[in-house]
View 1 (tube, rainbow, N blue to C red):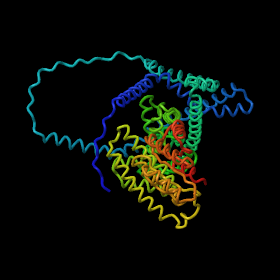
View 2 (cartoon, one colour):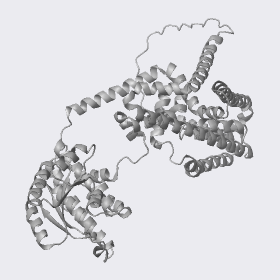
View 3 (cartoon, one colour):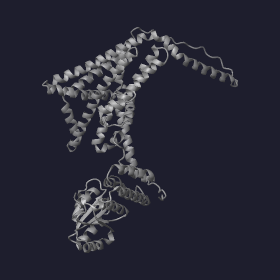
View 4 (spheres, rainbow, N blue to C red):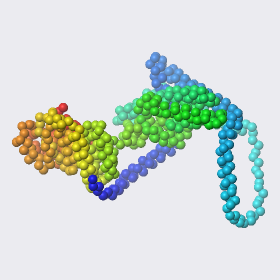
Length: 588
């Protein structure tokens, strides 16, 4: 295939740069607001998180006949009591661990002794290098003043109390605030939902309702399932460490349960801690290796077997997005941000799905394919990578009927090329090269499909009509006409002509055929409507009884106005896809 020269890219429009700067400024403003407002936003986010988790059990108690207030209080007190028990157990285990560390000092010293020797050798080598360097004469230093030693004031034995009391008081106040907010959110969950819907406006009532329901369902289901999985895995890890005789196995099991809420790294933070403890209490390195193998085996089993079965489609967020979000929220809010990273990211992805203005969030965070087959095919044509474009086309065609390949890959790509050409995003010769490449790839695809079809297929299911297909205007319409002919040839006869010979073809068909005649005018969006109206008027004037069908392919958005325009110009039917056009032409 001849590859034409690459045309220079068009300059970026000033309004696009302006919009990009506005978007960057808005993102920076949001990040600054989140950082400086964490005193208020962190307790509020934690309360919302607990409300998501505790709503299902509270609703279950209400369905059993318990009033809302007792249900909410019972669920909230039970949840925080369990959380307090876990924290108390972890603190006690950690306190005992710190107290017992001196017992393992000898073993730890033996493990780090080789590293100390290596460091000592490096320092000795560095000193030899410094001694071998030529000495430089230094000017005589003037008399140095005698140093003055400042003695710190006497420190009271209880002077540390205020510095310790302040963070403890802050933690206690935040905990009380989170509990109170959680109770109020559970008590008035419908009111909070209605207020959010009111803020969004009545015009977006349906989309806001779907977004809230989707976010609540995803986050609540994820947190409950993740909590169950983490608790089970923590118990299994703790039992495994107990069998391997690792001290304080329950502590590491609790760490696994809690830290595994942090995507990807939390589990291995607990794993490294357990491996370090094993290395500290046992001689040699075989025992820490066993602990490492156990953690790796459990991680592989959870990631490849258990979680895909439990979560099915997951959170709807890509793994890379979850990892980047964990870093982002940890930078803004510290350890609490790590805990909230997944729920907050899921909520952002849901907002991107339901709010068109924030659709970029769905693209950046969602786990759906970034580009559809048509966009991937068109992208490869723009890059002049015709081999990969052929691979994309062949892969899609091998799993779908030819009509779907035309409708979902080739026709959208041709329509996109026409749109980009009219908007000035690509030059005319770039559009011509895309059309030429598609025509060549289409020829190979048609030849391949004909080899796969049974020989007798073309003689069966002949339609009771005589089809005259006409490309209205331009190269893209002619390529679309080739797809149309290939799609209906196995089902009957077709005459393909150009627009300037349309009337002669209709006259000849009326003389030679006893079947009713159907004229199908094919035009690919955008453009071509004026030429289509002229052809419709000309055929309708000379052959008033001939059925006229328009295939208007590749048009996105609302088609009501275009449909009204074509029907008022004389079209009997309008098909918006190749499959729809064939269904109107040849009823199944």
